[in-house]
Length: 177
Image (cartoon, rainbow, N blue to C red; front, top):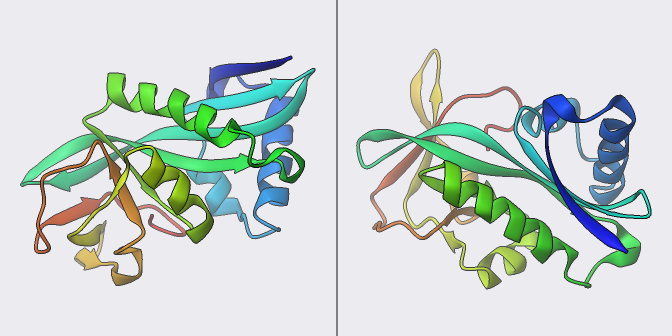
């Protein structure tokens, strides 16, 4: 029997965090670095367990994003992964459902950077590609355009926007988005 748990990073035990890290390392084929790990900490984690075995994980962390001339409180989805042997069974959708409730109740909107594999899941749930520019607030240079993130940055619920509109994300080490 599976159970879905919502837990803040501060409540997760060292073995639970180790299980999440191991799942992410396996799901991303070893391409989940220290900074990627750091990006998913400090928020709420949705985990699906079966008999204590971690099957799926995703997190929402708060970020600041300037949209329409105002800095907004955004629920940023991080580290969504499902164990390889249980993929295509709806677990990713269950995790997203829990994360979307967090976004809806605690943030102005949600955002994420989608891989090609994840994009279909997000689009099927009503997340939309941001049609405008994507930037980061570089602490030394000011707004820095991130053209590689344009076309893979999704928002939910959809925001009214045109091609010239901007999302300016707060700065962080590693991959800014």
